[in-house]
Image (tube, rainbow, N blue to C red; front, side):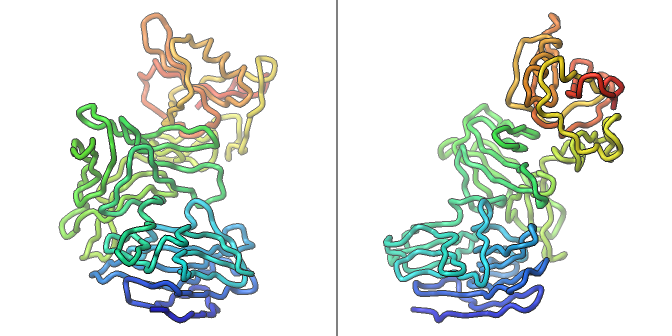
Length: 421
């Protein structure tokens, strides 16, 4: 059945409209949201297209228009919500910016797409000519396109964002990604690898792990699946381990979703409390502030034992936002050891079985190196040298970690010799 086109004029700062209580729509469906002619900071317009027949909290699919943080444009996206939580978005990895209007349509040829001004297509499912007849929102929150035989031709579960829903599977070598709200070149990822699940802070082509889960039994991970009790790990069809939900307390239901937080990079499982009418974390991977990768807002900040941040001395009270990248060789830079600190980040770039002075030279000779962490691991005075292209994730540690040395690169002959933590 063809559904008529709805055109909604958005004049308020916050606008919500529900167009249908059905869990599906058919080909020929189109909805248009008009975009304000002038940019309005904080503007949000949303039309809920379909919803599931469940008790609260239930799933809803929507078309959204939001004011971008750049102060100029509006983004247009197709979203899925569980209650008030956005659990999937077409614009997660690449936002579609438009003016005048934001249109979602399921064409007669079965292609689901978003359009802007002058019929410009900003996102599409790529299912034209595959026999698609309906768009359905399943009770799991999976948004699917199906043909007359209910065969799935496209599904949102195949395009993970920063949230994993109950019943969803992720195979080995896939990941969740999360982007800090501030304009940044950094992003977090949860990666499912053959032998572990790990959290990474990504910076260009470099990435640094800050939490790992090594499964029991030394078995390879084929896929993971979110269940009512936690995240199950499978080898083939055999479940062999689980990251278990602890539960926030009585009255909470099963696990509803797993989220990679975009402000902290922490990994959490969430249950819904009917008593409090909100989602609560039933498990989190990292429990101490200083173990988070960006516990300090500024580079060259040190997370202290109290959970506050201080600057490396010599860089000023706000760390001066220094970036010493480009210092090359002994003539331009020198390495300064910071006492009583380590990095919560572990670089994937390292040199093993080297001495401390060789580790120093490795960083001085690398124009992109900003810091190293040297871990002495045998009686011969040799160890592993981890190389960093950022100075983040530094935290204070108790005395007794004499086998770990953290050093930063500073300009030659500056105040660097006086730097200490």
